[in-house]
Image 1 (cartoon, rainbow, N blue to C red):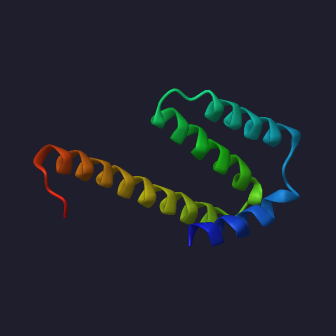
Image 2: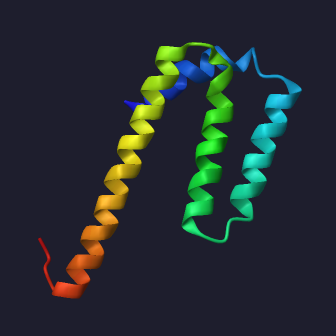
Length: 93
């Protein structure tokens, strides 16, 4: 669902991207390349995707995408906690 929403937002953003917007995208890419932790990489990735779609100008679409990203990040966090717990306790399911 996120991919489909991002495509709609990107189609609406493409013609509205400015040189400043491209600068924000470039900065996010550089921050991702220079990330030293997974948290820095996630922040850069989120900034990159936000910079691509923010110009679309459809608040409800942007809010839906932010929600989808938050859900994904929450699931990834819970999975990481579970994996750490599984390694510690020897639980596999």
